Structures are given as C-alpha cells and as structure tokens.
Length: 263
Ligand code: MG
Ligand code: MG
Image (cartoon, rainbow, N blue to C red; front, side, top):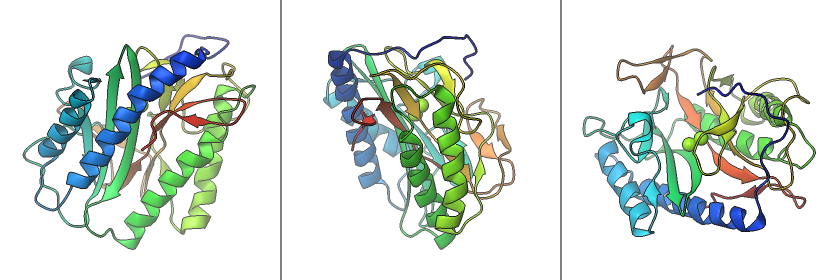
C-alpha cells in the first residue's frame, strides 16, 4: 500500500495515546505468542487464525485484519516462499521445517497495534534459520533510528545498512523484498507515511517525540522480486526462495525507541 501525500512531520501522539496504543499492541503480542505455541506439524493455518482471533476477542479487542479491504481472517499466515498476506486456510497443513510468518493486528479503544514474526515448525535448515535470525536482527537495528529529530528515510537507510551487515553476521545472501514496507499507524492500521525498507538517509517527514511507525523488514534468500497470486492477496517470492518478516509498532522517544507490541 502506497502513501504519496507529503507531510512535514509524522504525527506526535500524546503520552496517554501511546499507552493506549501499547495496550492494543500487547494484545497483538499475546496473540502472536499463542499462535506460535499452537503451531506444530499437522496444524492448519486456519486453526492458527482461530487461536489468534480468540486471544484478541477474549482481551476485549477486535482483530484489525478481519474485513480490512476484504481480508477474510485475523492473521496473515505466510509459509515458506509466501512473503506476506497469506490467507489462513484448512488447505495449508504445517510441516516439520516450515518457516511460518504470522502478521496480526488488534484494535482496542480505537487504537491499532500491528506486529509480525516468523518461526520454524520443528527444526529449520541452517540457511532458513540464518534468514530468520537476520530479519529479526535487522528489525531491531532499524528501530534504533526511531529517534526524535531523525527523518523517515533514516529508518529506511538503517534497515538497508543492517541488511548488508546481517549478510556478514549470519553468513547468508539476503534480498530486500521490492514494493512492501512499513507505515504510520494510529487510529488506522495503515496511515501515512509509507516506510521503505531501503533508501538514502535524511529524507521525508520528521520523526518527532512520540511519532509512531510500524517497522517491518521482509527479507528473502533468493530474490527481491515477488508476485501476487490469483487470490489477490498472497505475495510470493518469484523464485520460490524462503522469506522472513518481522514487525513491531514502535514509538520514538527521547529515551530511545519504545516497542508498543512487546511479547
Ligand atoms: Mg503487520
Ligand atoms: Mg504493518
């Protein structure tokens, strides 16, 4: 989803609004943990969706994804070569060695939290494990640029540079998925601005004290090229290589980045 309207600053939330966003975000964290605990060989991604939806609703929140632009489920469940936006279904049965990415959102009192993580079902191959560890690390390195006074693309550049460093650190070739990235977030899941996962530093709107972004690197082992399947949702790597996706909703504060979707 693209956001091209120019704004000079990324909206600064009040301290109370950040607390409200964190309350929504922590429900997402709980749902992601419950999904991971339920994931095992033989379990379908539709069953994982039920686990997430139950967790969110029992906490008094609404699963943001459900009905979003017609999306039919509470999570995106993206297995192996699926990068993002996989639709949960009884047809996808998890197998030992699968790399599963779960993306989830919750709305509580009008505020949205959005977060994703990827994990192995059973044991991953060393290469898949390196990809997944690298993507998580890139998220946390990129987050460090969520500092008041930085500009939007300082985060993009931090994510890109971290990806290059991760290739050394984790011993794998990594590719940054083209055309997808993070976003502003608040009352709506996708607000301005769009946040690229690569690019030159020092451009775009200013990050203020208590500005919030969803930061979400998506990396693959083989290609940046991708395609959307005929269901109009599922995004896959063009070469069938594995993909990993990690996301947190993060506020910039004078004391450093504050993760609003802690697990
Ligand atoms: Mg997400
Ligand atoms: Mg997001």
